Image 1 (cartoon, rainbow, N blue to C red):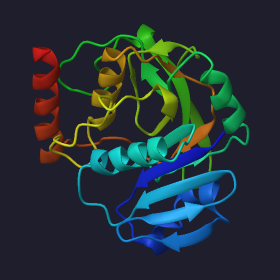
Image 2: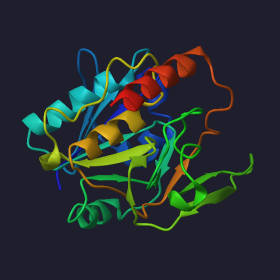
Image 3: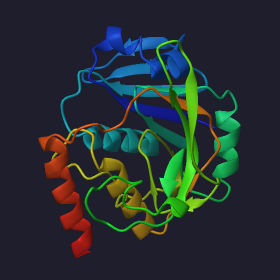
Image 4: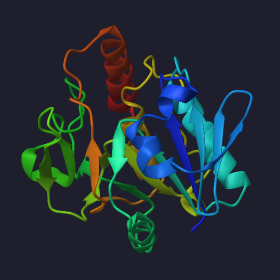
Length: 237
């Protein structure tokens, strides 16, 4: 399965190569530098990394989707730079998932009510959650598993920490919204709703990963503006 990984990071190249994503997915790759992006290439997995990112990550992700379509990739993986994929069987698992589904994530919800606060788990009832992701427990390296709910489960929305997309299922209409007024909020929810609108099937899958992030602790102005844009867009549709 020919796979292209896309990632946006606030780090420069040197510091990106210290992140969990680099260490678990890209370490040991041949390196080559492009004009706006770092490019990593191997026999099994290529990656395009937007370093020093300060803009809506959907802009970069759309470039990755176009590159994947133009160059006959089978799969695109879009993930945060603070995610460790600790599962050597992820290629086989994605191939199995793609037999029935078009977009694969690690956590999500089967139903939502679009409202404030516009966070996937708070717009959904607990019984509609699905998936599992590990998180750090303390500074000694311990982790705990956040069990959202049974998986695989067909979902309406998926968390953007990890999204795997079957390239052959994409159409030019299924893209990230580059007008969202934030760097990294609501891009994933909006994309999932777009994908569902165009009849793609989304699911969670048991791919084991550690998300080394506490999540949104205090909404900043970017989140507030993005939330309003997202709610206005999807409550008018």
